[in-house]
Amino acid sequence: MGTPIRHPLIDEITERVALVESRARVIRLSPALADLLARPVALGRTLVLLTPESSRVTIGLRSALVAARAVWAVVTADGYRDGITGIDHHTLDEAAAGHAPDIEPSADFDGLPPSISAASEVTTQLSVDVTLLHRATHDTLLGGAVESISAAIGGYRPLAWGLSEPLEKSWDRWVLTQDARHRAPDPTRIIVEGEHVSAAVTTRVTDRGLEETVALTADVPGGRAGLDAAIERLRAALGDLTRTSLPTFALVLAREGEADRSFRPVTYPPPNPVVLLIGAPSVRRLDLGENTFAPSQDVDVVGRPTLPAFLLPLGSADRSGWEALHDALDSVGSERLTTLVDEPLLDAWEGDLHEDIDRHGDPHPHDHPDTGGDASERLDYRDDRDGLDDGGDA
Image (tube, rainbow, N blue to C red; front, side):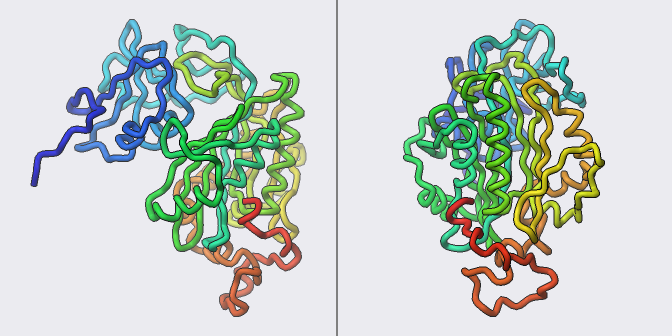
């Protein structure tokens, strides 16, 4: 057995840390860094990206750091600070083992130590996290949610995608879907960019179907003055999504961020939850109904007639949505819901959703006429057969 070769990006190795240093003003997910983050770190060490306070990271790099359980450590006068959680540490070993405090967000709490500089020249944005399930058929295409959400927020469209930065591939849903299929069973994490929109998309492909998780941030046209209109457009787009595909869960946050949608180790105003979507698979799995929620809670029933989903407006430009979000999660049971958003969803729902994803109906146009199985366990799409093409709008 040969001697392990250190990755060329690693500057130092300690008992607990594999250290990568950078002084760049903007740190991107370069091909070499993407390769390093995709590798397991030997002997239980944590990969730490060490930067000065003047550096900022792209949404693609931040997503990759979180996915790899790596740490962004920022040099401060007193030691180090976690660039993502804002927690101060005396040593890099502490930073590598650090955890965020268990504190609930509020309108007057920014979650970071008061010594951190406040962000300046920020812009109003909407951040959307949504997970969708797709059939494992040849005509299924990924990326539809990115397109519809981008268009709803500001008439934007994705222009380029790639596994690392700078992005070198023009936006093409068929090509990125084939790329994800070819990399199976390993998950595929890509970065998407367009004018005023950035996203990180993770895809898992199995025999049961495709699981697509989108984390997207887009600038709001008109800034804060245009926020409520953008929220309404996005709510409508999420409602449409429940009729053309199988979203399981989505949360929309209004936030203030950098104009290029990067992240700096500074204090940003606290985000505000504005929309919650509990998709049809979650509704079915948790056996939810309209009576699950209190009469005071605002709940819109969306989706197909036989596959209801719940869309809950939470906050607005002038109203905090945290209380409404907590009330909704309390009604559903936050611990129960957490079990359904843990990765990978296709494994967690192997039982009854196995048939729902594969058949997507009783029957579906792409199914063999004799699908077999217990009809009582299948979701009935017979009234909605025209809107079931994942390839078009998923």
